[in-house]
Image (cartoon, rainbow, N blue to C red):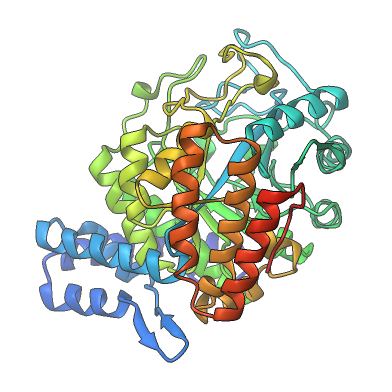
Length: 482
């Protein structure tokens, strides 16, 4: 029988079923233990220091107790602390990105994904390099600077060489004032050698959803194909780190398995990366199972309602205060609005989840991976964020200045966000306003930029940011960054 060891390199030991079950039992036994719960909440709360704020974070056990607690007053405190943490370390910035689907060819048999090999109702498509360029130009014309590329697992149609070629093509496209400055990659688990190649290609974050940490369920949900190998998939982030990629993104697909089990497993994975490599995940994504071609989410009996979803997100924020949380257009405007306050730091905007979807005027549905709930344009999302007090950020400076992995975490932990990320967000927002925004969005945007510049603590930094924004308005000079 495997023994729990967060420093182990074996999946069954760092994501240990026995430890998760013991954690869930402990959480259930202590969900009404007010003294314990209040001590956990106090531990999670940001503490002011001479350089800003610091957070202790929570263990998977401590966070699981909060998730199990059903007291409305405690939930209110969880939400309050989640918002405090979000503002302390990410401010009111929200990073914007878009997914780019390269190919839906896939050899796996995942029962929850329409790309599964046996699905004959979905047309298969793979972008040529010319089509990749066209998609990138369409995304640049919207105003995007950061992409997450996606592709099914198919060694013949989507080998690593194809992915690398697409990355090179994406970075090569310079259209008007548009550039894609960061390419994150969401592809199947691969080898250390291939992760090294991705790093050399200049990727940002390597993202891989675990889907479920429950091994028995995982094997049933992935009956055929290379993804069936639970250990190889679960240990992928270790290989990515060994290949030099120090920004990795975790995630589970909520709705496949019991959410409390997934929550504990997710945090154990984060603890493992921290223990072994000295830095936890750069991001955690919180997708929920959605309807798609050949997929009926009602066939799965572990769905979670909006309130539970919000509670999960808030508890993740308390547990891993320095990790970015991503929510996609899978979720509605209403749900996204609530979760932005509870810790989410990145959102997609104007997304299309079909292969080649950005170059068509009408949104295609025949090759979508999942139904998009929030179908607003990027301009509408940007304006909505600003009207709700959030700064839409197109910043990619940390990645391009080498502030990744533990260097980014150090920046976050020392409270330098307001002197670095905040002005970078305002400068990239100014680029968007000048080059792509509607008149209505421009009006809202420049009012926000003017007000938010005042919040930069250092006079020198504020003066430089103001000068750079003046240059953005007066010329085609772009890409200023701290």
